[in-house]
Length: 186
Image: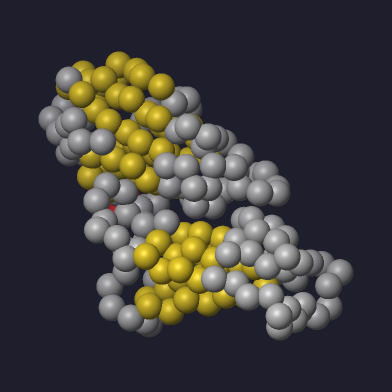
């Protein structure tokens, strides 16, 4: 599912999503003053808890009350194919299969998406696309690579790591709603 929150004119909102026990969840606070937040393609089992909050500035002692300004919270249930969150740990890596394009999102500056190669060891072609997303990707050798096409060697079980290049940045999150994609061919 995807959870999207519209913005309020003079409020810096944040958004949290977790399962019913509150142990597995995600937070996003990237957009800044007056802009909404979004968490894409979360895999959730059972009850869902969504929290909308205000991020207070350092010199802001009290929250702002906008009683006349509405926001919209949209929860979209999706058939989850391709990338699903969480997938930032080895055990949660999404499978990457020969010729099947995987698409996903980097929802926060610190988001990391991992894909696990399920095919046999060999030489392959990879195409990584990231229109509008400041992205780099890595194979197990750790070398930072930019989007585009490349000839690579993969071993069964190898992880491909996708991350943002603006991890220490401030301000609006560039490419927040633009997907990345990865496809492997022979």
